[in-house]
Image (cartoon, rainbow, N blue to C red):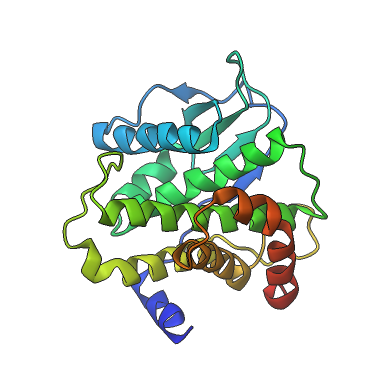
Length: 237
């Protein structure tokens, strides 16, 4: 725990908006075909393909103006499970920050978790439980992601050079990043979880994979909601 909070000093404060869940895309938002960065495009859409294959989903991914991450159960494509929208300003900010590429992967996995929730008509006690549940999955996916990255899997879209020596720092910094998108609006229906709760949710997900729980369905369906409730009761106050 000490290592996690000490590494807080390595990261600047993140000021963009949090993930939101909405019923349908806002038709007034202008969607973009690219981030104007080919490497960033390859990262985003490559990971989208990997997540779809792993989770057996079909999604539509929109790049939009702004700094938000959004998930919708509706989709304009045939046989599609939902729509994800990522703000181009968020993506560019993170891509140019040390370790930010991995944070982008985590945010994308978080939004995919919402699509799985929609597909399975999952019912949650509150928005914060739904968000922490998605954070746990994002952590699990990052554990899976780093495992493949270390193994030089051809499916991964980031270089693995020198990663082994700094893997612990990257994981700790990612936990800090998720903590920093927390909020303290405890009495709002849109409360997503405070700093510590979101940090510990990502930690729990990564730790679950590292301890050998490599089946995402067990983490997501068997224990996910109860684990989210436990973290909220322990930390979200």
